[in-house]
Image 1 (tube, rainbow, N blue to C red):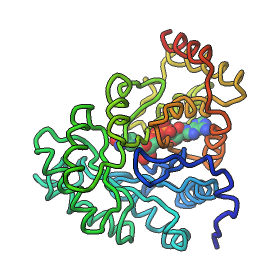
Image 2 (tube, rainbow, N blue to C red; image 1 turned 45 degrees about the vertical axis):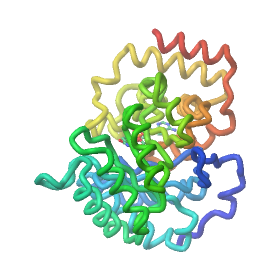
Image 3 (spheres, helix red, strand yellow; image 1 turned 45 degrees about the horizontal axis):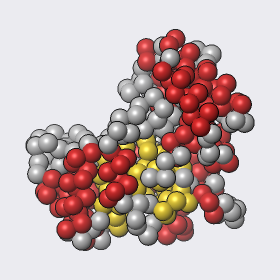
Length: 330
Ligand SMILES: NC(=O)c1ccc[n+]([C@@H]2O[C@H](COP(=O)([O-])OP(=O)(O)OC[C@H]3O[C@@H](n4cnc5c(N)ncnc54)[C@H](OP(=O)(O)O)[C@@H]3O)[C@@H](O)[C@H]2O)c1
């Protein structure tokens, strides 16, 4: 029988306000994109989720299509909720999204009102919930008016099926457009979920500035570059690593000598800071105050433990930041 750790909120500094909202999010959130599908061992998934909550990670990130197969991560988390976490529902931020392919025909993906609202109902059923805390439009749809997509997200909030509205993967200009529409609808945009790491910096030139100006928080996904910004691949490609066993989005050929040369040097710098490379990579994205939460994945409980250690040192000297830039430039 699970009982949540009494120490889970000991570190009050672990929570950061999301944009200009009243909601605080943990500096680290747990993503269920990988390792929570129907073919992943349930006991491992359960142990990761419960350890995360025990360490103060109150936010669990899902999407309709997480698995595989699509929908199965929501089913897995629904079971964890039913069997273990239900008594703590009011301490949890549970998110889901719709935008990518879910079912055949013209209403099974992208950004129509028809798709988004049907998908949210399906997600709630899989999760066994009456509402999610954040409902995201998972991607900008150039074929649907922004008013329709965001109107559907706002409707989800107004109808009580979600508490907050979010967007993900929207370019900077469309983010500003979405913020305006949502504001006019009386449902402010809480959060933007965007990919960001030392290896992928597309948000830096424009998006982070828009988020700051609009008072929107940012949850940063793949801050560890899907595992590349860790010590995972220093001795080859382990069979149980993402590149080793589930190369849908991270293939062995992505782990090149050039990449490893950089990550080894970054690892030396992390050691000099008293951190693991994973911890330094997380601290690096969280140095931006607009980055409300770094959204990690994990295949083992020990990885969650390691990642949480990042928050002991989120500060970088100008010299350290300059050395990171030099290493990344190769
Ligand atoms: N909105 C979107 O479009 C979108 C897209 C992608 C992801 N996301 C969200 O972001 C979440 C995180 O994405 P991600 O899994 O790519 O993030 P990530 O944190 O960059 O990578 C996670 C992987 O890094 C490795 N790892 C984690 N901690 C480690 C540690 N301390 N030491 C060594 N290795 C460690 C593990 O790899 P191994 O599995 O190899 O052990 C783990 O699976 C997803 O679950 C999802 O919720 C959103």
